[in-house]
Image 1 (cartoon, rainbow, N blue to C red):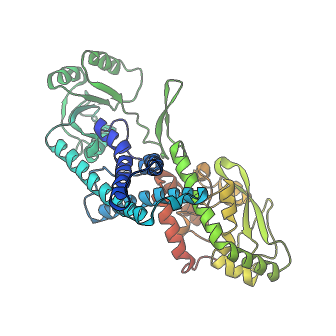
Image 2: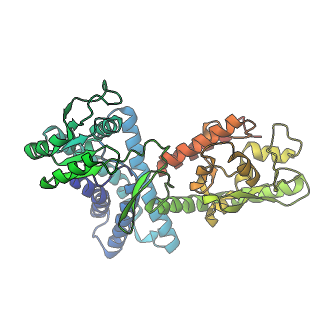
Image 3: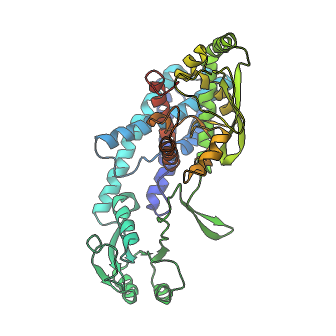
Amino acid sequence: MSYSSFDHPALNLARRLVNPMIVFTSLFLAVEITHPPFTNFHLILGTLAFLLSTEVFDSFEFFEMSTQGTANQIRYMTDLVTAWAIVLGLLALLGMTTNTLHLFPPIMLVTWAMTTPVLLFLTHAYIRSRVESMYHSGSVRRAVIVGANALGYKLATHIHKQRNLMVRVEAFFDDRQDDRSDPSLLPIVAGGLNEVAAYVEKFGIDLVYISFPIIDNPRIVSLVNSLRDTTASVYFVPNIFIFDLVQARLDYVNGIPVIGVFESPLVGINAIHKRIFDVVVSSLILLMISPLMILLAIGVKLSSPGPVFFKQRRYGMDGEEILVYKFRSMRTMDNGDKVEQAKRNDARVTPFGAFIRKTSLDELPQMINVLQGKMSIVGPRPHAVAHNEHYRKLIHGYMWRHKVKPGITGLAQVSGFRGETDTIEKMEGRVLHDIIYLKNWSIWLDILIILKTIKLVFSDSQAY
């Protein structure tokens, strides 16, 4: 989710209620069109759909003003269809497990499934047009930024781009007009710190952002005290951008504000969304591939002496050791303090093992790890414990990749960093893409990586 409490109140309300209300209304219309009347069973279905939509649609951004342009429109439509498909999938799974799908006529369900995205699209377009109209008509909150520095300019730029904040920066204030990091980029300063309160009072400014360091500075203390006589909201903008941020966010510890500069993206409702996605997808895949897994197990057993499964110690979320399952593809199994990665034409790999490694079929037992909650469908690939201990000393931020559960596939693997990492540069590239995944996680990104993985299974030359 990209929105915050700074968004326009009406827009925040729309985000939480519009999508589930449209889903419920669409169900009512589908019933009235195909199979009236609306019964208690429909009410139960509508209530479940409302609750699921509240959470699922909350993971996507449908009201940004930046949906213009072909690429953004495609992304928007894909997100819309994906969110609705997730809701329908969860409802279908619930219906199958409770044996209640037969209570609803198929024609009604199809009508509902087809009508809802159309109504959502029209409603979103209307809301965005209304917000855009309000923005251009001047119905916005007015702000000033105290601190004509790079951080202040960065904040102003982001405010300007994010129209749904409904905020316009009116002026900058700074005593140190000759001490700006890049004067050619920053706007003209309207005055010094002692002039802020008068400007705020005179022009009815709603928001004051202070981009100076939060220290015991008499100028800052005096400024804040002077703003007590105005109705403006006052915010400090911490300069945390000096760090390599991963899921930075503001939180509270018993009322004390704390700023996280590195955090897992899977906290709160995001963790629930991810877990539901993993359980549903892994369960469906295991049901479909169970005959194939039996055949693969027989092939492994016949290829060479030894067990069917290879269980290797690896690091899971937060560095916890887990046992990862794979179909055995080698004659020997390294699982100690020294683990040698598979190489091209590796003598340890059996002919059948080469086939299942090439096609990634050896990874299928990890679906069991996903159901156990030890792994995820998508995430950084788990490395052997020996590899972790080696590379964590060589690559800055290596252990950050363990802030989410390891995955069967990941962004690094679909970006050219699959297979042997025989140089430090290759491992650095893999870790870099793992961190990019942490920074940008979403259900949509997981789905995109899964689709790319399916394509790679049939075309990748780096697996052996």
